[in-house]
Length: 132
Image (tube, rainbow, N blue to C red; front, top):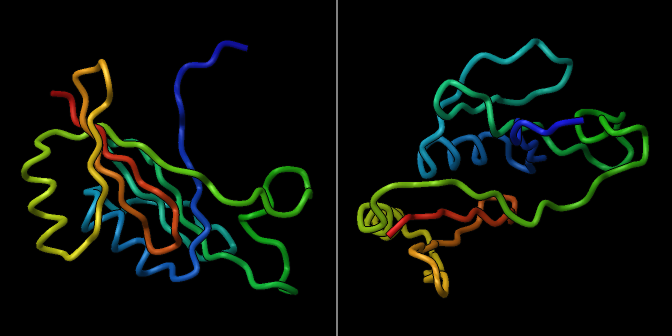
C-alpha cells in the first residue's frame, strides 16, 4: 500500500449546526455536496476537496450511525487535533479576537512556523499553521 495523502476527517458533533458554522465561518471551509446518507451531516470543502466531514454524535442507546464505520468496535474516541495550513497570521488573530475565540499562540522552535490553537464546539483542537 502506498499512501498518497490524508483524505478526510470525520468529526462527530454534539451540535451539528454550530460545528458546521465554526468550520465554515471561523476556519473558512465551505459546505458542499454530500451523498444522501441515512444520518444527518455535512461535507466541508477546502480547495474543491471534502476534507472535514461532520455527523451528529449518536446518543447512548440509539442505533449505530456514522460513528461506527470501523468494524463494529464502538466509538473510536476523541480526535486530538486537526491541522490546517493558513496564510496571514495577523489577519487570523484579528478575526479570532473579533469573534471572541480564545487561542494559544506558539512559535515552533527551530522552524519558520507559527501556530494558533483553538477548539471547535465539540472540544476538538484545531491547529492553524502559518509559515513565517
